[in-house]
Image (cartoon, rainbow, N blue to C red; front, side):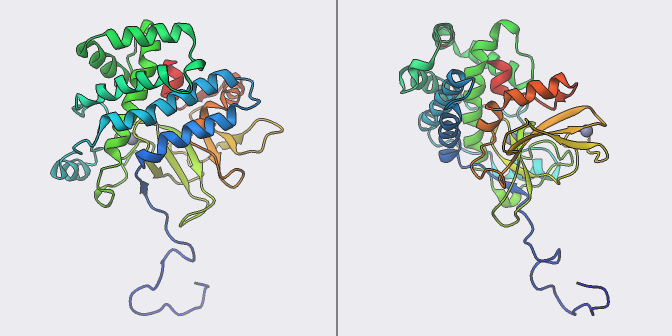
Length: 313
Ligand SMILES: [Zn+2]
Ligand SMILES: [Zn+2]
């Protein structure tokens, strides 16, 4: 509305914020698409990439995650009353560190290991990774649960990083399946806007959209449950300040992947731009741009949170 216009009486017609639709605050994951999309994107990005072998290995892991979904079967989602209570208390209903895991997640882990070892990416697995997989499979339930607890609480022992890669991947499958079953209409963003409203984890990256209800919106993508939530642009996702933000990217590249660096807290986060490439994937494009992480780290910035599959792998 321009100045001098007369405000209309009665209810607003359309969106009171102006000509564009308000973005959805939260987008729950579609488990059937999430891991298959990452696997396909990693295969594309691996072509001609300096780290092609590793990206194909990670494509195989994403494909194994997709295959593990089937083994997990339909899980009973969290009780509707508990979800409402958590949301009213401004807590994430699937809090990664408080949620009582269904033992079926370990069936998912077993299926993930089977698919990795026997699937079409099996040739990409290095010998030492095969050893890690076999020893992980042979461990009992209690040991596997401890690895999961240690991963979710951020206390992975250095000797366990190899095994934890597969545990983390299986937990992503499990939490993504559960998040996909949450009642979207009952959920709210957390007061800590940098944390996932479903499970309270940190995002792996952000995506600036070029389509949908509100193009140009930024969504952060959860590193654990794959939910995406709206986070205002031009505000640091770590400290919430906006005075010293800037973008860094690798010279000569498309600009689809950039590091948003914050001079206030000296952190950075990876942002992906659909206007430059509609096919960006929050996990695959993060993995394929580790070179940018190296450049930004050398310039003195710390990543806001690791990609769990890089931390552990
Ligand atoms: Zn989450
Ligand atoms: Zn900051």
